[in-house]
Length: 134
Length: 132
Image (cartoon, rainbow over all chains, first blue to last red):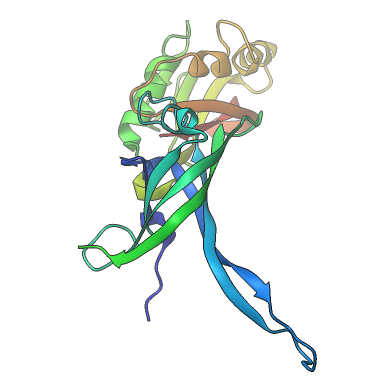
């Protein structure tokens, strides 16, 4: 068993590596759930169904044109984007998740005493491909 | 990512635009007031974003004026500590154009006594929040 630090995490959206702008990210997967409890049972009986989830990430706003968070993400709101996340960083054999999703929201925050930040949410669409990097 | 020497040099270069203020890009020895000294970071945090995307530095700049008991020293340090004006450290530093880092904010100033060769000088210690 080995601990992994988050600082090497890689996040790519629409083929652009935006890792250097991102401070934190969450990858949530879930399934639908059907309650199949019948008479005579003392506890709920459930079965899983369709899979789903979301990918949320946030970080430092950057004024860089073309590849900065605002320039890249805001125009993609409501569109399907390809996402690759490498939770252990880049490297052969390391974990990788690839999926498509709807870029559901993009938010910018401007506190008076801190740096401008952004936050984004992508709803996973279709299957997630989980493979080791080659 | 930032290069510390470049950061200190560029901050010093910008401070040097303040008329009448001598500037040291590092604590280089004895001072002749009024002098601004770019100090070494109080804090230097790596990994403010994934993939070495950003570092954050808290950099002190010490402005030493005349003898602590002189009215002229009080007046002089007031001009450097003001939030605006031609001698305002905050206004001048934040108006600069830099290549060594992305952004700088002068977050505040403290006042203290700086003693050299038995002489007590009035000092203003500015804190610069730098990211790049």
